[in-house]
Length: 247
Image (tube, rainbow, N blue to C red):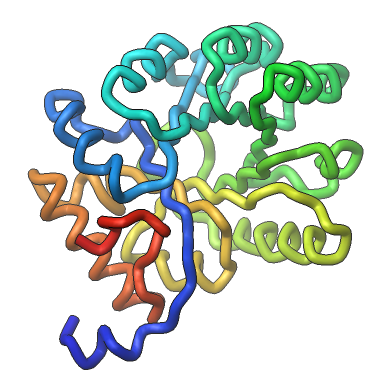
């Protein structure tokens, strides 16, 4: 992008949450150290092999990441027994815990209270087929709502553009009723979809291999390419509010 085109970019701050599941484990410390001055939080997928047919990270992984980074950790649960995993994450004081709304019927209020009583943030996650109406009994108590724009469980799946309508609906509800939740989106955040995601305007972009870590073999070069792709696609200056976000 040329200097002239950069000067015409619009201004809007976003939050970026790299998905640790998609990092290169042989460069884990190097990548976390680089990202710490550029991103707002980290996204940790915890899958149990039942809610989705995959097993990934764990509360132990969060504790290991904290040896390198002081940024907030946001756990994204893809599990059938939310109560079991919430307790483990509360025990290690994971800053934000997001539960699948599909498995919390009968325990949602209790788990939200448990998370808040520990001084942590409580969120809900919606699978692509799940409507915003499923959140209404407790939407006023949520700190975050995550919209899945791919089917959960695996990276690299087909982007489901229809799910972006939920982001627009959640923003409207928040403005009308004064809810406090942040709107997060998770799934295939990359060059092919930056523009349509930006138009929907979530607060937090979860980004993984296709949009960042897999762009090059070097995190610094991948970051520069991601920033260029975002700005070229959206017309907005890349700004996470962090000091080194455009470097």
